[in-house]
Length: 231
Ligand SMILES: *Cc1c(COP(=O)(O)O)cnc(C)c1O
Image (cartoon, rainbow, N blue to C red; front, top):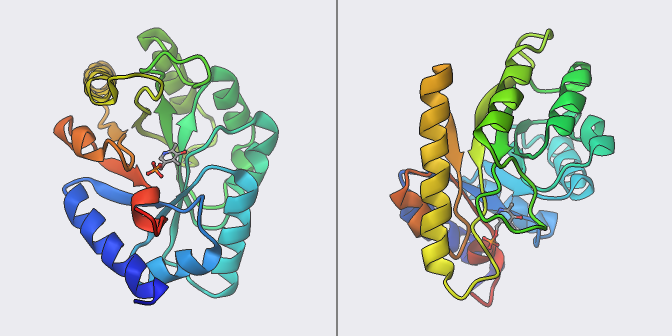
């Protein structure tokens, strides 16, 4: 079977299994040709976790007039890369807003937003693992939401949802995934009622997206299941 067809079949299967959540195909392991195969198979939402890789892929898509693409930035964003990411053509959302400092920088750089609105997901550190970024209290999250809503440059940003990753270093991946996703949903429900919002949930990767669905994930971010030919 050729590679394009292999990707198409895996995409179709994954998309069906993810429903009713929307599938973001994570292309961080994949050369741009494979992303193009997926696009032609009907996948429009793609996630990347490094600014430089996203920039290169987005530029290629633009040069080929593949303009229905929606790019999702899902990796840790350094404040000195904010301008670069905001200028990416067809950037749809940033899932990894993990500190007030980053929110401040985004607000300062609102003039660089190329595709408005830029949808922001606040990352929550539900696993409490040190190397993972993210907000860890309702108070911090509230501050971030207010800061974004108070942005004087109206229409550039929307507070769109919350994102998390489940615990990796554990003997109980499954139990931890349940705990982390349940926690994100609880926090989301609290923020929605406090601020009268309709925040979406971005959670679930190849190994735990079926669990994420049980807690009403709106977006699952899946890479290896689709693009790794070994899986
Ligand atoms: C890599 C990555 C994914 C996808 O992980 P897979 O296990 O390959 O499905 C999802 N979210 C984030 C933030 C990632 O970095």
